[in-house]
Length: 438
Image (cartoon, rainbow, N blue to C red):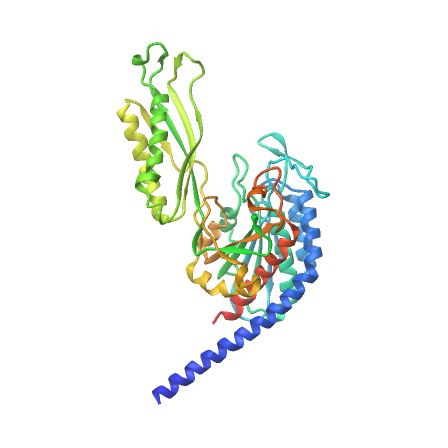
């Protein structure tokens, strides 16, 4: 009897898995057809957003454009989240999990150098100055892809279980001086609550990944970022009499070199990369005066919490030890003004959704990617709920990878044809997660 019950249980499980696979395949075909049909609209949305970019925390017209589309779908819409964020909820009317999908909206203070009919010539204000504005990281495509996924999921409401929360986030590139913004503020304002989110998915267009391909990774896919500041104080003296000084410049030079040994001699870099970079050093104003003070600012990038914690301990230790040996004083401010956690793909959720990536893009187009030491504030969502973040190809197939313009540059370019896969992924990840939930 025991073995009979076990046998029946196994059969039921296999039947359930078979039915889910068949249902998923059928839905996948429907999503494919809808993605093809909506692609011209997605491209139109992207071109408009690219032509009229806005800086972080200033995405007012972008938010209105998104809101109009979402209300036109009959969705419940909330605006003004974290200043300019837009959030909409699609309720299937059936019990089930809540899935969140996120796109970032802001442009960058970059002057576009592309001969596109939808090229940006917009200007914006940053720290009291007028600057050119460009979508130089592809956030215009992210918004357009999520608008497309929202429309398809609304059309396929009968196949959903639970709710979908569409999150259009401002200020991913960092809030202006003296302001806060982005995912961290959205979380504080309750964007993952009411209804409570069970899982969140996001993606980023990649200018050096072929159109049609998707890159994923278990665990840390993008680094934590921790800016820091070091102030070294010594004793001023004439440059001709250095023995009368406590030289903060020489001390700072030793500190800069020693910081590199934290990575090369204290971090197990065969597990994950880590970076310490000094981006600015200021001190002194004449060739013949040894100054009293030197200020340095830099950034730390880590891909696991152990390395991050070690950096927080090791950098002050190195700095203060060297300063003391040189008879100087040193202050370390870490973190300086903001920091992002590791963009960490939940292992179980990544395992669960990997078949969706394969079915959507094709096995040959799904790439287990290396991590990058860039950062993403999607990580604040992942600190609260399981999440998966992906890279979607935007590089034209006829452009060699080493010739593709980099993100955050005036020449940045991604091909419109890459967005269709993004729309399908956001849609299928939602459907599959909902319909595989117990």
